[in-house]
Length: 203
Image 1 (cartoon, helix red, strand yellow):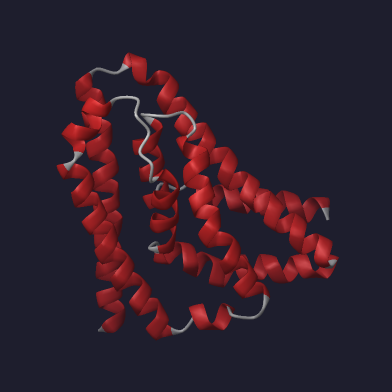
Image 2 (tube, one colour):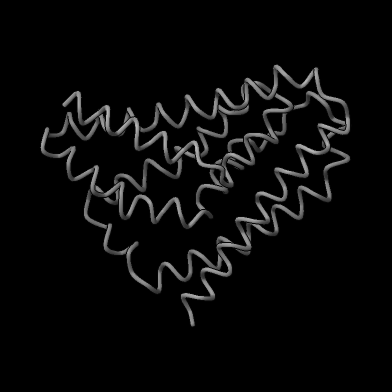
């Protein structure tokens, strides 16, 4: 089981460390609070845990359906673009607030997770295989698998927000503005990519 859990940790980290919508939100919120990563991770887990349970109970084929994937790409992409544009428009106000932590960090983590089709497809493909493998160790194997994966999410997002927050004193206003713009463009970029992928699937 140790080797299996080690592989779960490595595969999970390779996924969570890839830049994406959740990472972009963590950068944005982390500039204002070192605890933002934990809050974003909580929101992420609120979507991830039910999805893990759905796959555990045999819903993986549903998420592999072509029509479902099209809807995920188109809807998720459109809303991510909208969120990114909203962040760009509010960047001046966000910088003036300084250390004030937005109340919706948990909601931001949950929203960007739910609207990321790659997240859901990752679980339908790679995640479902890991879940099936964990079942060879019984219920304890499944529980430990879920715990290890969630710890990877929490650990990485917490690390990102702490590092961003503790180094922000070295930034000028221009650098902070640049970070917010970069985070916004990441959301818009991924949203555009998801939209184009969805349109390609429709065609």
